[in-house]
Image (cartoon, rainbow, N blue to C red):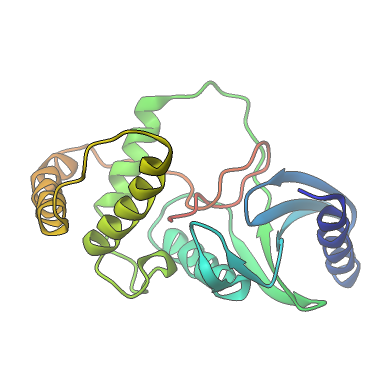
Length: 214
């Protein structure tokens, strides 16, 4: 993260906080495409997910606008909430100096130890739900298995530039394997005891947003 980028996103977060009567803005986490700030407003704290740029051209998102990703995040947050998956609530999406800023509830770490079994139960409960009724940006308009094969081939090609690796099986073989594996996994998920679960967007140290489904 360059100093200029850090200053720009910080200025955006401070401006959003001022509009909302909040203060004490601090950087709480940083990812490839977004930074997460938290601010205090009276007895309430809230978080601001600020994009590094208006449009992304990363391996994950090529030619995708920040606003598109923020709106997807907000819809996924609503999906999680509507289906009983405990998660940080998406409060609002606002524009500040051309940047789409997603305002989120701040959820503190409760200090408990990591429980892999509980996490697995949360993920299983999410998999039992109906798929969200929106096409994910990462799918690029394709079915999930076809898009996953595309991504696998793209990244494997990059690895082969630096490393001596065997060729991948044909695309049709990979896609058929994914479809078969998905069908084989479905019964085991159904048999898992249902429990209330956790979050859905980009994991950050300390305060979290959602667990991004990308």
